[in-house]
Amino acid sequence: MIRGAVLVVAAGAAALYASRIFASTPWLHLALKPVPVLAMALFVGQGPRARERYGRLVLLGLLACAAGDVLLDLWTGSFVLGMAAFLAGHALYLAAYLTEDRRPAWALALPFALWGGILFLFVHPGLSNLRVPVAIYTATICAMMWRAAARLRWPTAPAGAWLAFGGAVLFAASDSLIALHRFHTPLALTRYPVIIGLYWLGQLGICGSALTPPRRG
Image (cartoon, rainbow, N blue to C red; front, top):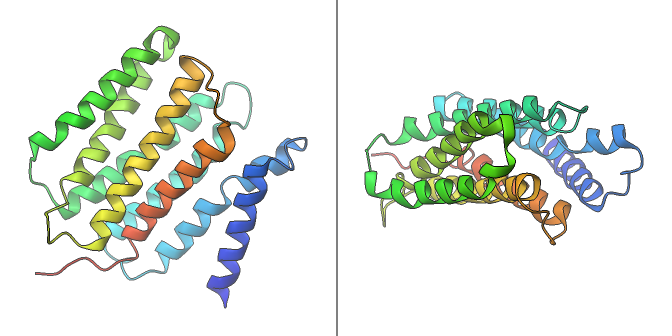
């Protein structure tokens, strides 16, 4: 009953935010943004892995990202604070993945290093004094994808590992589009339905990985 109500509220907030119905009322529009991720955090906090280190790290990551949702647009100049909150979220997800598998898997790092390197080359000219923070952020999110991929031991990887990997890639895709839109060239695609949709789907995958019991043995 309670979980159903939480789902309805989260879905409603997501739909209202993405549709921008309350865009002319900035405080209300902004208040809707973190609701879906806070709902995911609530589910993880009550889920089967809530007392495991993995579940705790994912929960903290979701809360950090919910803070970032607000800080990113809270006032002029708060973008860097929002980026710092999301950086903390990515670092927490990275730490969570490392609790599951610490194999080096260096070959798997290559495609994500290329992803980050190419993205940084595109946005570098427009970064100004944000070059170092964005470089750190890009390296962290690419490391997160790499460690999510390292858990995929075909064909024995548990469902949670696939959810975590899919979530990491979708989250990174959303962040990459934001970076290109903000620091390179404004994108023709509509920012809210596409970018925020990828972001929520990515977070949903990561959340789901903490709701799915790991394979034992």
